[in-house]
Image (cartoon, rainbow over all chains, first blue to last red; front, side):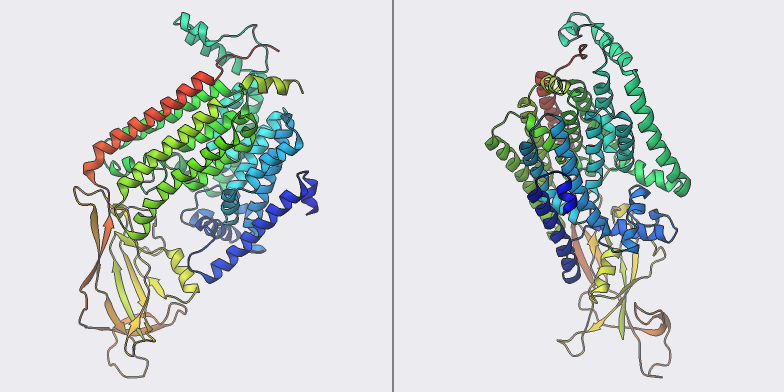
Length: 422
Length: 184
């Protein structure tokens, strides 16, 4: 507990939430031993089995469905040597560290200590990350790495930020989408030319568009961006080379390629699920997959260009869009943007009633999907059309919430100016 | 001792990790005897999967004098979408029943050699027994997608995602700030 008060947050809050998480871990042990339906997530058993293979000197990929970096298996080897609860304890500690990083980032953005604490409480007291980490999912580790990257970017410590970013991309591919906003953010502090080139100018000349991107490209070739790119690239490449040397092609296939080419025809939250299931073996399959990729790509590009000044907000929008429009979406993915929401909340000019309503709407959307999914999975009824419609509705709800967040956000410039005044 | 040899078609499978967990709770004793025992792909659809052979040890039923029971947790795989019927069937054919006689010399010929129990590795000799079925086969109805929905689903999904992305795009263009930063 002394460690927690040292972290600087409200003493009562983080102790209480740590104890709740500990309780959930031990309750999980009880449920696993006594009931047939396990509390522990299947992924945790996969990690533990892979760690066991590593302790026997073998490849972790001998464990079926282990599709993560070997680093995770190595980190969890104390599961075999000490106690099989080590991993879960590590993940709930990751939750607390993530909250600490959120708090520090909010302090750096000139928020006062009490308010910052309340925004962190949204993460600490939220049942979703609590259950995900106590069930043994490793999402909190990636959340810590992403938040630490943002923290060091705020402090302009580029080398540390780049190392952590390289590590984050190695552990989970999705942070690679942050590369463009980070590059744009780093060039925005450099003074290359007087005045601005804004969109009104573009409308006048048809070459203005090309000129805009050409000037942008030139400004991206500055020292900060190149340093960040080199360090992050070096971190990522060295980790990949070390593990490729040890585990060969299997490592590349399971850690990266599987996630890039993943097409899960089984039911999931994605709006594309039924379309991909019905066309899995048809000639249109590749074209449809590509068509599904275009909205994601376009939106990510436009959001990067519009909001790169406020990196946390931009990354939040990036991940929320990426997850909502992805071809596969499971509930673990929600944590990827949930961990950035406390950083975005202070920017929102929204009444708390509207915020609560949007949150409820989000949960209702999930419940409407989970109901027909339950009847399909456990009762064997043909509810595919209902699941598909619920998936489309969930997409609408997510986009509605995103539009509300975008339209109620303080202008990015004001935030950037505030940071410059530090 | 009584055991059965059960064959699972491609459309059905058992989860080896669930099996290990049930075995730890003494709820079932099953050995996977198919050729590629190493790996049952729990995620594969039916057309990419393999058949599974199982050896299931039966326990005496406490409620019925001459009855034997066992639990087999079976899962259904995703099948190809059907033309016009929303369900396809997985068929569980009747198993072979094997009996191991524990007294010495009670059967002259015991043809089949198999482990005595799932836990230890000792082999016993089992005899295949003819019997009368109650049900010749068990049919499992598995829901599948309908091909006739394909065009509707594709068009509606792409329209919906285009609409949603346009909404978000419009909001970003309206509220976002597109310019190269000015000098400080």
